[in-house]
Image (cartoon, rainbow, N blue to C red):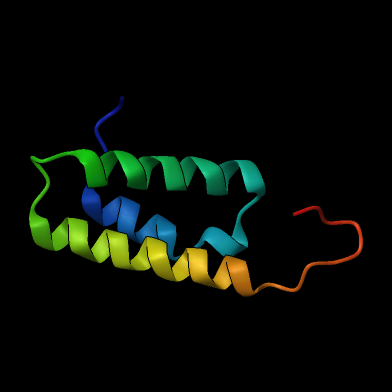
Length: 70
Protein backbone atom coordinates (compact mmCIF):
# COMPACT_ATOMS: atom_id res chain seq x y z
CA UNK A 1 0.00 0.00 0.00
CA UNK A 2 1.32 3.41 -0.91
CA UNK A 3 1.71 5.99 1.82
CA UNK A 4 -1.02 8.59 1.71
CA UNK A 5 -1.55 11.48 4.05
CA UNK A 6 -4.67 11.54 6.20
CA UNK A 7 -5.31 15.06 4.91
CA UNK A 8 -5.38 13.82 1.31
CA UNK A 9 -7.74 10.98 2.20
CA UNK A 10 -9.98 13.39 4.10
CA UNK A 11 -10.04 15.81 1.16
CA UNK A 12 -10.69 13.02 -1.36
CA UNK A 13 -13.76 11.91 0.57
CA UNK A 14 -15.24 15.36 0.02
CA UNK A 15 -15.21 14.82 -3.75
CA UNK A 16 -16.75 11.34 -3.98
CA UNK A 17 -19.83 12.63 -5.75
CA UNK A 18 -17.78 14.47 -8.39
CA UNK A 19 -15.62 11.53 -9.50
CA UNK A 20 -16.39 8.34 -11.39
CA UNK A 21 -17.37 5.11 -9.69
CA UNK A 22 -13.90 3.56 -9.93
CA UNK A 23 -12.15 6.57 -8.40
CA UNK A 24 -14.83 6.79 -5.70
CA UNK A 25 -14.21 3.16 -4.79
CA UNK A 26 -10.46 3.80 -4.71
CA UNK A 27 -10.93 6.79 -2.37
CA UNK A 28 -13.10 4.68 -0.08
CA UNK A 29 -10.48 1.93 -0.09
CA UNK A 30 -7.78 4.44 0.88
CA UNK A 31 -10.00 5.71 3.68
CA UNK A 32 -10.48 2.18 5.01
CA UNK A 33 -6.72 1.63 4.98
CA UNK A 34 -6.12 4.83 6.95
CA UNK A 35 -8.84 3.91 9.43
CA UNK A 36 -7.12 0.56 10.02
CA UNK A 37 -3.68 2.15 10.50
CA UNK A 38 -2.98 2.57 14.21
CA UNK A 39 -0.08 4.91 13.37
CA UNK A 40 -2.59 7.51 12.17
CA UNK A 41 -3.73 9.75 15.02
CA UNK A 42 -7.12 9.14 16.53
CA UNK A 43 -8.41 12.63 15.64
CA UNK A 44 -7.57 12.03 11.98
CA UNK A 45 -9.18 8.59 12.00
CA UNK A 46 -12.30 10.02 13.65
CA UNK A 47 -12.53 12.85 11.10
CA UNK A 48 -12.07 10.44 8.18
CA UNK A 49 -14.59 7.99 9.61
CA UNK A 50 -17.11 10.80 10.06
CA UNK A 51 -16.64 12.07 6.51
CA UNK A 52 -16.86 8.53 5.09
CA UNK A 53 -20.02 7.92 7.10
CA UNK A 54 -21.56 11.14 5.77
CA UNK A 55 -20.66 10.17 2.20
CA UNK A 56 -22.18 6.72 2.68
CA UNK A 57 -25.33 8.31 4.08
CA UNK A 58 -25.63 10.64 1.07
CA UNK A 59 -25.14 7.67 -1.25
CA UNK A 60 -27.91 5.77 0.51
CA UNK A 61 -30.27 8.73 0.09
CA UNK A 62 -29.71 9.10 -3.64
CA UNK A 63 -32.72 8.34 -5.77
CA UNK A 64 -32.60 4.91 -7.36
CA UNK A 65 -33.60 4.96 -11.01
CA UNK A 66 -35.42 2.19 -12.80
CA UNK A 67 -32.16 0.89 -14.26
CA UNK A 68 -30.36 0.68 -10.92
CA UNK A 69 -30.14 -2.54 -8.98
CA UNK A 70 -30.13 -2.94 -5.24
